Image 1 (cartoon, rainbow, N blue to C red):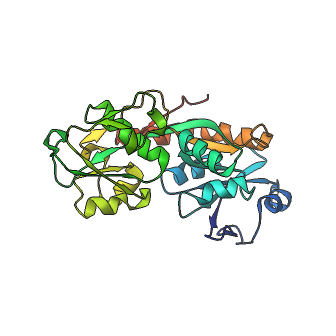
Image 2: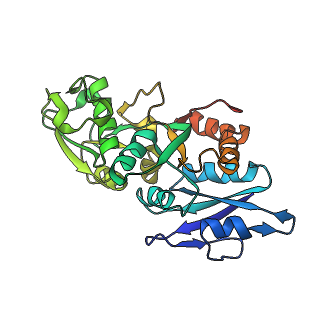
Length: 282
């Protein structure tokens, strides 16, 4: 069964459905019930489609007596803070390198449990029809957070546009660029504002399909796409060390790898938005 909630900027939880009662995680688990019997409510924080769509589908198929409540957040910070502070039970909004940086910075205990899908990220251009047209000294907009900055730079490195230090990999920054033959100028922009950079005419802009779709672009419009065969940056179901082995989280994991979720992801895969990172029933 599925419910929906909203996590406000002050990390206060307001339930948007099923009566709209205020509740924390423990209250929901202790008192959550319906006319058919007792329910254990499991709160999963997420941010934007298709991540929120996956949570909803998982909520529709999870086995009794469990019920998933989607807790929507408004930025890329709240879902980890809420999980760390035990205000939710799990989250679904990030790849493992992003989570690891959070753990390092906040002395966190978050754990990546299951890769679900790999978003097809890449570079978009309002100026060029192909990457071969990239001009000397062009501005390149990349994410300001550490893991997505590295991801963007790794794409350029893979294509031979820049050369990164051999030991940089998932921690790469612009300081690790050893060769930049086109003298590209890198601008750091918050992930949520990269679409605006495209609209402002920045020649080359990194972005996710989730965000770029707001201006009617898809990965088919990209001039450069990532090759991530090992699913390093797959969007993961994340819990905490203290609850990762609980029956509740195991039930959530089974729902997230259900045939129904896989079928939904395959539909988006056909549109070029993402690739499933699991086989149904895993």
